[in-house]
Image (cartoon, rainbow, N blue to C red):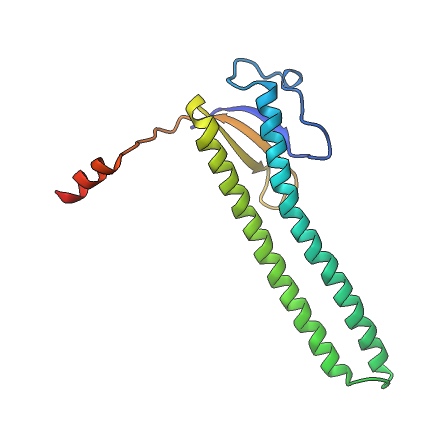
Length: 166
């Protein structure tokens, strides 16, 4: 079981918090290292969120256009309302699918980013970063630094070949 050393609300609208003000002591991380990690995570997350924001903006524009065409077609000026309503419903279905896939992909990218950074920089120090939520439906996320008590076995190629060849 890992012990949590630091919990910071994941809010990139503000500057990175000062570690001393959070009461963090006896750790293997400096303010500069934390700020570098915070800024790289911020850049990664903001890129992913901008993709979702773009999907939402395009969806609103298409929905407004379809809604306007549907309203005009209700008065018999253009097309059949049933066809336009079917197009609107299919658009909403495709939008929901794209949004769901984008969110899942972004969560996966974020998990891969954290895993890569943990392996590259923090595991050797016995530390591990993660992003947690208080509840599954909560929108508020927390960046958590915890002690990494996991035991890692590193087998080189000769060790793997020796195990499999027997």
